[in-house]
Image (cartoon, rainbow, N blue to C red; front, side, top):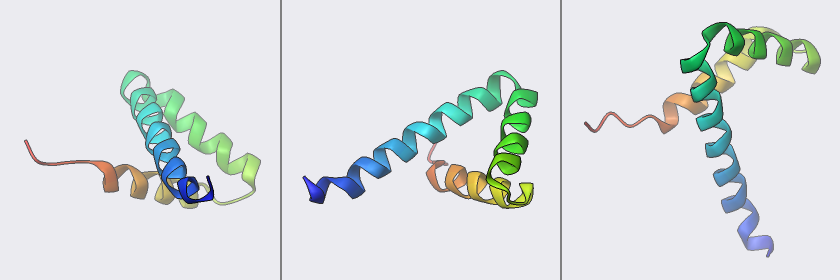
Length: 65
């Protein structure tokens, strides 16, 4: 069971990224607000949240068309 935790975490992270991607495509303002409010609630600069989200997002993008 313990061996599966990293795999499960990766799967959950990918699902979060997919969810955020869908939100960003459907309504950019909602996505921007989500990032801003997350930064406020966590007490970190908004730029830090943007860097984290975009880093994860771009790491999962495939340009193999």
